[in-house]
Length: 440
Ligand SMILES: CC(C)(COP(=O)(O)OP(=O)(O)OC[C@H]1O[C@@H](n2cnc3c(N)ncnc32)[C@H](O)[C@@H]1OP(=O)(O)O)[C@@H](O)C(=O)NCCC(=O)NCCS
Image (cartoon, rainbow, N blue to C red; front, side):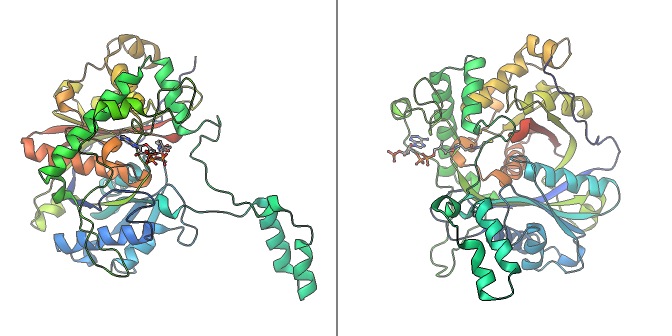
């Protein structure tokens, strides 16, 4: 049996509610383009400063700052602390950084929720950031050993000695792989495996990618993302602000998608750059408060946290099935069913991953074999899913996407005057997270 027991984390059963007072994100920008000279710290600061500005929250009221990120920033390992200080939050406010692959912002969010529910804090800034453009590059281990030995030398000869045997391979850069350590498979290869095992055709994947771009470009045209977005001026010129996600293709058609060659299995594969989320840079930040505190300060929150759950499966199985495992637990904890969810935001890492999860939601066999439940979670009504497109079109800055799902869901619930919504995300390592949100 390859089932890995759920990692049951915290249950939000107390009467106290956590309010999401406000949230913002930078545009999500294709890596190597408009934000290529900005760092994660820059992006996090830009979003946080604007949130403080717009909400007019006195920074003195903030009790904690938590940010998630995936690619480590070598010079600012506690990125949250630097964002906090850089955005003018008092130096006396603690800050920490979390990482949980693509669920990093989700983790910062629920860590903030827990901190409020446990009465440790009342006001927490949470968020997520990623600059894939600013990915860290290491020297090879052998070269780092030479540098280490050299640093111990007390004169020039001793300092030079470790480098005498240097070879070309020693100076080759060591770049981070977007691959699963325990299986060696890249994320794209894992998506291929899911497509194969769940019989998700190339056409299904391309149709879903087209849907994502179609809905996102409609939303962009209607300026729906404006509310959740901070205009981002790029230093040093600070000329024209960046105000739009730049991976959304407004004139995309199925023929263009069909003609793309598979990237990860070039011979027999079905996963292409069109049905994979593009590598992106961006940041997202949310202001959390206890309901009581939010109301006392006169805020009208965007929504409240009803419940949440995390899951983990063996990465050797299907890597991105997290939502299919964490959603039933989150719904049980919320005392609600899938049908009660008026909107669903599911992270689109790859078309094959979203479609695999949605099929698992509807599958009695999956429920019986993997969840040990007698009934499937249910068929999803696609009119409720990613109604303004998803990561395939909008982009996917790893550490920030979990926050964007929450933000996008809250604004969508508001537009539809709906009450309950689900945000769910898969992550490398076989992780999954689901959050049920509610409006007043
Ligand atoms: C798939 C991936 C490898 C593509 O990277 P890339 O080759 O640098 O992507 P590009 O943007 O250069 O696109 C390659 C080509 O596809 C085209 N393309 C990309 N997205 C497209 C889309 N949605 N529709 C049509 N064409 C598209 C580009 O125009 C480009 O065409 P060209 O070569 O004629 O210029 C990269 O986006 C990736 O690794 N994504 C997955 C990220 C990941 O692992 N996430 C983890 C999830 S947990």
